Length: 117
Image (tube, rainbow, N blue to C red; front, side, top):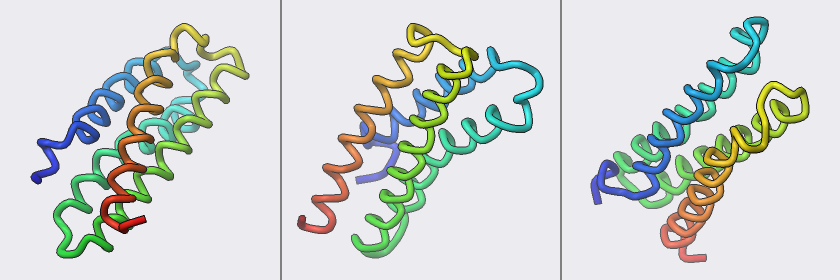
């Protein structure tokens, strides 16, 4: 299946848009810190899904999906940091957390199918 047809890729692209919207609310002093890091982590998720899909073997594909999974966990932590620092509220981040949870489950399922776990 081509990566653009995968629901997990589509949801990841939706998450990128959500994160870019949220990071616009961060203080200016976080422009080159937390903001950039969150955006890179968000962009990494669909990018690695796409790159892995273009690889020749299921093992290579699963490796890139695992990188996406790591970026998903990284981004989740960064959202918690934003809440802890009072940069964002739980209400503002609700959709992002929901997407992250959904994406994480889909990535786990896909990884398991590829690795026969």
